[in-house]
Image (cartoon, rainbow, N blue to C red; front, side, top):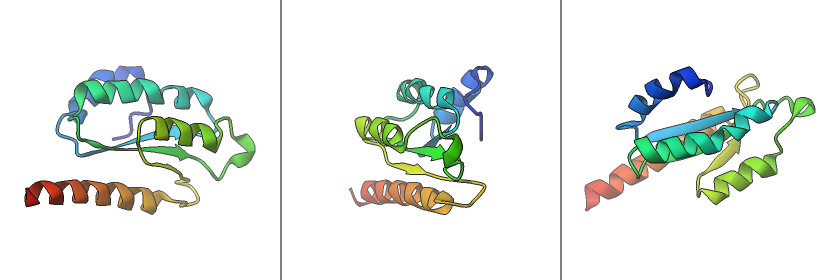
Amino acid sequence: RDTAGQERFHTITTSYYRGAMGIMLVYDITNGKTFDNISKWLRNIDEHANEDVEKMILGNKCDMDDKRQVSKDRGDSIAREHSIPFLETSAKANINVEQAFMDLAQAILNKVSALLLC
C-alpha cells in the first residue's frame, strides 16, 4: 500500500509492518522533503517491524533528472549507512521497477530458504 509518507497514515502503516517480510521505502528525487522522511520511516520500521525484515530504498522519478532535488549520492549514502539496498527507479519510464521487486523478492526468498535449512 502506498501511503506517500502522509502523517495521517502513521498508525495504519505500523500495523502493516507487523509480519511484513519486505518493505520498500520510496522517495521522490524531485521532492527533497520526501527524502528527509526516509530516516523517520526507518526508525518507525525499527520500532514496529520484525527485526529481520528486508528493506530497500528507492529514489523514484529518475526520468526527471532536470527537476532533481536529491542527488543519487545522497540516496546511496543513507542506504549504505543502514546497510539497505538502493536503486533509482522511474515508474513512468519503467526504469528499474521490475529489478527492485525482483531484488527484494530474492532477498526475502534467500532469508526464508536459510531459515528452512536450519
